[in-house]
Amino acid sequence: MKKIVLAIACISWLFSCTKINETTQLRGSNLDQSAAAGFYFQTLQVDNQTGQFAYYHISVNPIFKLQFSKPVDTSSVSANIQLKENSAALPVNYSYESNNSVVVMQPKSTLTFLTKYAVTIGSALKSATQIALGVSYMFNEVTTIDSTDKFPRISDSKLLNLVQKNTFNYFWLGGHPVSGMARERSTSGDLVTSGGTGFAIMSVPVAIQRNFITRAEGLERVMKIANFLDVNAHKYHGAFAHWINGATGATIPFSAHDDGADLVETSYLMEGLLTARQYFNGSDSSEVNLRKLINKLYKNVEWDWFRNGQNTLYWHWSPNYGWDTYQQVSGWNEALITYVMAAASPKHTIDSLTYANGWARNGAMKNGNTYYGVTLPLGPSNGGPLFFEHYSFLGINPNGLTDVYADYHQQTFAHTLINYNYCVANPKRFNGYSDSCWGLTASDDNLSGYSAHEPNNDDGVLTPTAALSSFPYTPDKSMAALQFFYYKLGDKLWGGVYGFRDAFNLTEPWFDPDYLAIDQMPIVVMIENYRSSLIWNLFMSGPEVKKGMKKLGFNSPYL
Image (cartoon, rainbow, N blue to C red; front, side, top):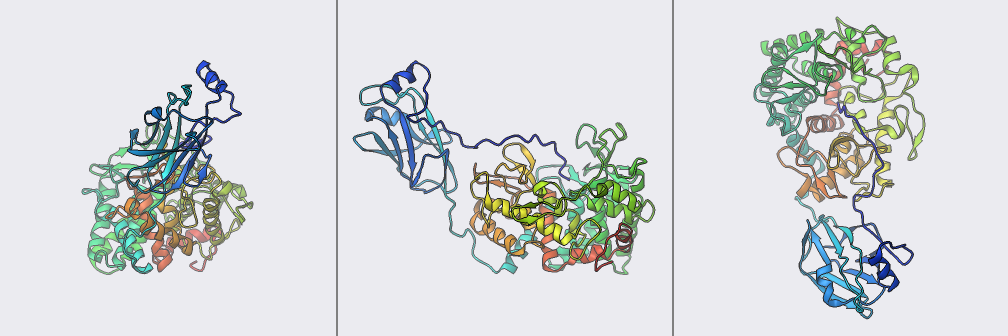
């Protein structure tokens, strides 16, 4: 779960510049003298772009034309008009037009694709009559994307195999050596994540069926995790913490008062374990023992206790702070699975009133408004981040799923299409957004560290898992994104062994060096649900799941 406190503020342009023209009121003695003498900067033309705050898609052999109101002193140009990369001036050639009132600057060497540069104008630049400009300027430019393929073309089926296999490696090769659990991120050391591990466990049947690993290897890994959870991991009324020390099982606090049970993360973990239980259905003693252990872990979660005496579920409980966070699990968001897991519990179930009051808020989670031409059944304006339609639906098949509040096929499709349409419209004019480069969800962020990206909180960061985990909903649009991410951005975005990096920002430009479990593992599972419905079929086959969903009023071909 991407529990973060968002300080959502107005997003200013990432690339700012000072633009002064004839109507600008100049202040300060030097500026007054410059303006009075009629010497000022007018505009910058880069290739065919003129008068912008920032220049994108410029060629790697650009021509910069800087227009001034009067002829310049050419002897002052090289020290004051420069092309820079990371504050270092690059070698350029200068020439002049319009009686030296236009300075033409060209780099001596070809620039690098998809790289940020700056054109700077120093205040000491002088006119031919020796009047100093008196003010400095900086304009930022980003070179165009290299349109050539970075890897040889392969069939879409082989590409999906490659993405699933390498992304699965995040868990398989990068998991914790003691617990076997998924690390929160690739740099997390002993810190493992309960929810991300649940998603990773769901990827094990995919890896076996796709021949990435053997059934025996997958069984051994899931048993290792289950044993660690049973013996080592701290439990709070049967529930697990968000973060766990993968070597000792001790709780690692997620935040100040979140140092105990996390019921939503626990539900993701159980979603994964029940999926594995349904897959490892053989009569061999090792598979029998795994099923028994998973049943034990699931039955011991006191879902009903987390009602705290109310007709709702509460997200956290701490042995030190009790219910201090007082965060109810209410929809619409990523936590539908929490109510399904609670209702399905053989020992600690909840009733439909808790679902109606706590999750559905007696109908208040409904939306019904239209955004970017699409009507959204549930949730906040514009839908929110796309992980709302991923985490619960790794296991729950939304196709044909209905209750009194929504048709969940319509919900998942509508939310994804709104997100896509928003990116194509690109109202904030961020660099790179298109019908093949889209997807807003929670991920790393080059500006704030981590953020729940969505149309109401968009700062130019796109996240591969947003489009790729949406394959079951928007297959053509997701495939277009996959091909663009791999073939066109692959030299920067494709990390190889662990698949795509967590996030990127083409306006900066920036590519995250890291990977996150809760973003990587849904890619594996949701691509497989698109291809074969494997994980949907496994999870929805659970007898407790069927019973629990019926109790909550769901209708589905599986029930």
